[in-house]
Image 1 (cartoon, rainbow, N blue to C red):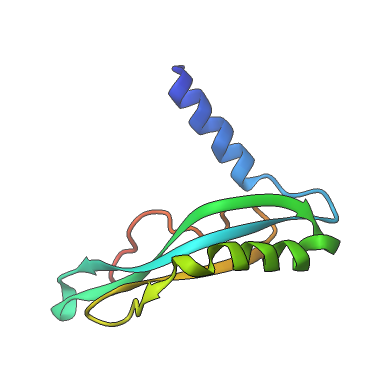
Image 2 (spheres, rainbow, N blue to C red):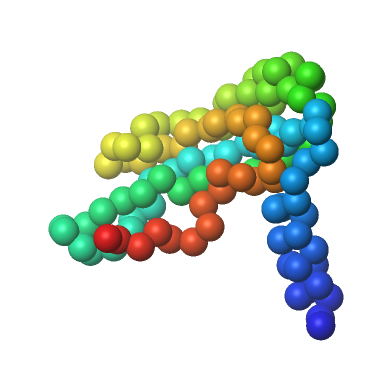
Length: 109
């Protein structure tokens, strides 16, 4: 197993491991609209890219979330749903690392 494969395996285990009671992840996401495919005249989906994550205690998560929201609020621009595009920033308290991140392009059904 190469070092790259080993790191990937470790990251996957880390991402899905349950947090001990009383702990959480505060994840910062950049959300953009991405082209999904040509079906039905073309379709788009929201792509969630996790740009920052902090592990913390659940009891302190509200304060940590507020700090991260203030830190990243200037990064948002435009309107992601318009033709001009844009970037939405969301800060979420979640029970796993990068829980809401987009993992590949969704399939049209």
